[in-house]
Length: 277
Image (cartoon, rainbow, N blue to C red; front, side, top):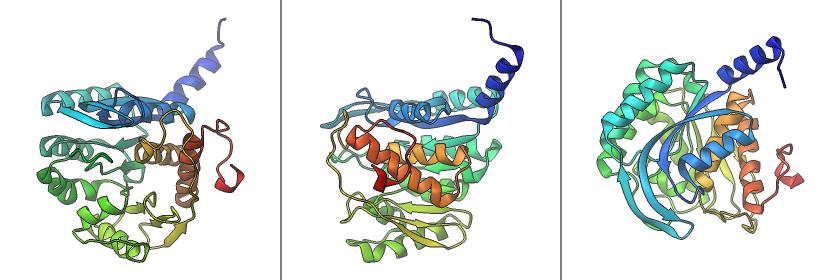
């Protein structure tokens, strides 16, 4: 089949405007990390490119081993991808070491990617208890990377580590979000995900200070990956919705609905309202 020149041109322009980068670890089970992010990008018709920060030995049952890549390798990968063409948005996941946090910080400082389309999922510990970012890395992320990203999507425990306060219940979440927003120095949208809350509501604090609870519902994980990697999927889906032009609230709601579809094995990607699932 021979495509018309206009069709080829349209496809090329689409690839440029919807070319998103994921910077994260490699999960061989594809439930989390880079491979999960790329699946989410494809589901949203977003062109995905990737830079691996670490190799892992993991599955749905937990993380057994983490092998970070060298700072030089990550730097070279990011530079090459930036040279290849415009990047519409970035999702940042597992960074593993302080050196890799520094590489990503410097990369964002020198490339022209709109801050409002840079989403950070601060992966610090796995659900099985494995450390995925060193203490020094957490400090560098807090001080150097946060002021460069437009979104951060921690769960309650991760938000507490970054904000350096301990919160056990839903009532303390707004304070957590406010502290993180302040660390971002303005321009940071915060979504504290509520997977560990009951009900599992997410809390959005926009860069303008608007605060919204996004309601959720507990569902049975019937998808092939179970509940493994939901944080990765949420943050990458959020980036896709932003790249596609959703408003902030629409993007959060759409990403949350996408996670529900993944958990339940539901395939219809046209629905963004959780109540319709």
